[in-house]
Length: 89
Image (cartoon, rainbow, N blue to C red):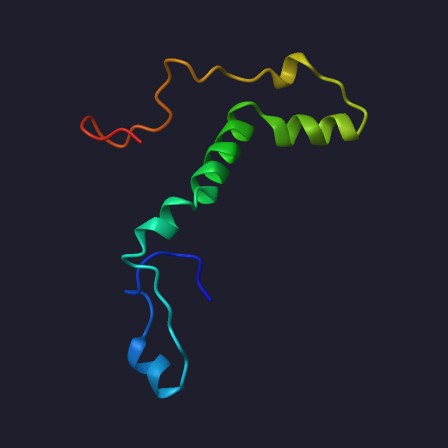
């Protein structure tokens, strides 16, 4: 089982030879429109890192309430990743 899109990374001939059924959701746009968990998880992880939540949580669990050390950053007006002048991610 693979939680990815596309079949280009699957050896279809091998799967068929071994009797492995390969299912694809390609073209099932109505079903796929309802699946937003991947994007939501990605944003959740992004916010956790920008706000330093994992590190501050660990510090608090150890009794270290270092509020100033774990101040987060505002995302408003920020570029999160810039790979080139033309492409912003």
